[in-house]
Image 1 (cartoon, rainbow, N blue to C red):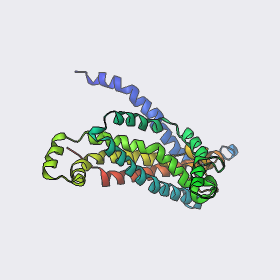
Image 2: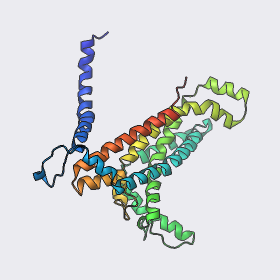
Image 3: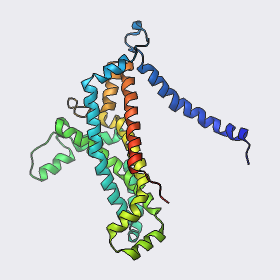
Image 4: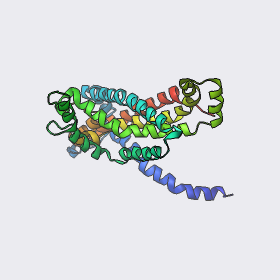
Length: 290
């Protein structure tokens, strides 16, 4: 048995790294959000401004517009990814699939291993108005050419499609891992009570999916709140502000307007929204399973 001093010695590097890469940037962002921090105007100084950045953010209609688009993006993508992921997981959970199940598991990893910037580039190729795959399908169906990425009503749907392509396998793999943790004894006992597949799923398998579902929802929500590279490569936030989510707007204020104080205030508020949604997911979905 190791002494407390030995345990602290081995834990110290991890704690130092956590403080350096996690806590310090957060505290620095909070500090900057409370100051006049325009790097193009150093002569004005970087003094405290008594929450003026937060008041400016609250009165900014573009901030609320980008936050609303972010919520719409979440409502648009999460249910689809959840249903598709659950469907794939239930298919792969079948015991009679054998070799195909192993191949499908490997195939599911490919979108996850693709960087968001590359996914955005693939999206630009698919939805290109002249030679994209989407317009080729529209042509086969007898339709006219569609400018997916140039239409404010379709551009966000195209981004949501690529996000769904990349992250649905994540839902599927988590659900599949959760299904494999269901005790065989519980499944056998349930099959003696009923032969309806829906009852078996609802009363035996579904409770085991809830912890994984909670974790996936939290991770995907946090990812959507900071989703930037896919959108920037695919649409650069356009046309207009149609695909300008909160992360893209924060980047624009911080690195095009160079008002880092206001941008940091937006980032801190995005973190608060993410924490609130995470607590909501835990309260609604999380269940201890024994």
